[in-house]
Length: 386
Image (cartoon, rainbow, N blue to C red; front, top):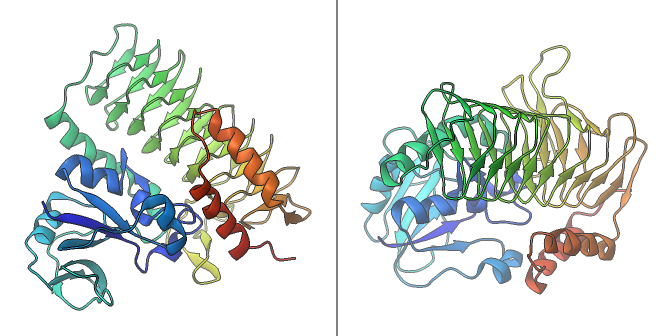
């Protein structure tokens, strides 16, 4: 396979705050990130063409003949086959969106003029698409996984309904109720489902993650690696390294990495008047409709919520926000905001990075100078408005 350069394109700014700290292709949907899917399913050699301030962390794209591919594209067999068939200088598009270009040199622009792609093409262009498409993405990943790997046995003390379950090496499932009739269940390497948990698929519980005792999980839900989740969760995606360890409801939401939701934190995912939920869009500078009645919380990396925090329907919480106190905070919580319903102040950068360093070392990950530079960039370019 040709080298694949996963490229941030027009979708990137519409996916903020999730893309503050990662290329678009590092968004998790289904079991894996988009980049991991290219590597795992097609054994692709991958690099990123991303924002300049992210390049010290993710590296520069490789030179030479490559396939430049929209990083927001969810790769399927059908679209990958069409991308691979491109010749030098040819471009694949879909409904006015740039999909891919084969080129020996970095194109001056990525134009939406080219050959129209066939079939259903999925481009993750808004945060809410991540949880809306998550069930379909889990189906795609699990069908491939079952053909290419061997599941461990499900312990006899588990009440299992249905057969669509894959248990990876080292996973531990204590006495619990798992309904795999409603959707696929994936229990990742060294993941743990504690006793008393109730799971209704689809669920992707990724490597080294834990469902706490008595957790109630409704799919389609993905819990990324090294996360701890308890309470009630419905149709949500947690990227990884985040905790919602206690009671409280999380629904129709996308949570980044290194986040913590305090005990009894709750998200509203449905308005009292059952109207369409509108969500703030960084690129547009205003709220836009989701065409859905259901949308909870979008939370950027390293954001924290104190105990008993209440998030209103369609809330966007920026990276490094620290939210606490009674009543509902505003539906738009800036990056590096410190406060709650009454007001938000600027979270001091040194304090925020000090907390990040402490949080990361708990997962045996050291905060690099390069990543600290990313955090500095976000702080300087997205200040809290006084």
